Length: 142
DNA sequence: GCCAACGTTGGC
DNA sequence: GCCAACGTTGGC
Image (tube, rainbow, N blue to C red; front, side, top):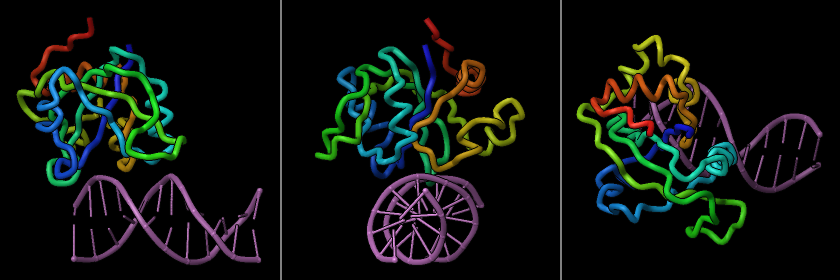
């Protein structure tokens, strides 16, 4: 299983919106960046990810699960763009802010810090564990 | 609201 | 195929 991070501007698509979709989940559409798309192509059903709020919040707010592998992005006719479907899993008990992540030596090599503009990015197993700990949710790898 | 960083586009 | 111009993202 691999781990990822999905970034969204809460005024466009927020954690609450994601939770409201329930088990049906939602297409992670609208990505128009090749790097981000390629990561989505690598995703497997059952992979886990963090849901990050950019802009005002700048914090990880919960965990998600990939429920459908890459397929054409229904928000465009352009067949270059694909996306996965994700559903919300666990809300963080405490949000983990970008400041916290930057301040934590163990997390300083995260893509979130290195390349703040990439909206879909990989997370290492180690980072996953640390962040679940900080967020107050179980690291439910199984 | 500004601006730096970055990715994409299109003219040559 | 290069590179300048432009648009977008996201932190500050």
